[in-house]
Length: 123
Image (cartoon, rainbow, N blue to C red; front, side, top):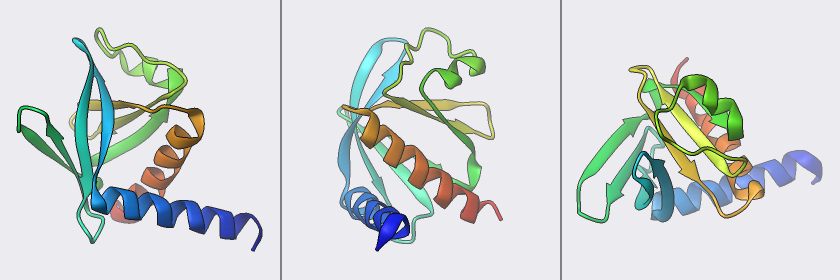
């Protein structure tokens, strides 16, 4: 299958996990918070739900960029610790959501897949 087969498999795993919903860590000024993150079946929006039940929808067509690791520091994130395991979603509004993953492979898969879906939604 080669690299494209590997990429397709990684995207399929990502889509299944995100539609089913998964726990992800979000970095904020108060530190790391666990949220439930899911996507709708047509892959148009991310849904984030905090443990207190509050939620936020992030439409993919409002995502300006997905930054990996320390490159997000250029965004001037106030009080948010960013490292090599982080992927930061930058919105058109200037808001950002920084996710922290258990390893670089998961972070890279999230960032890569999100970039593909965002580029499709912004066309």
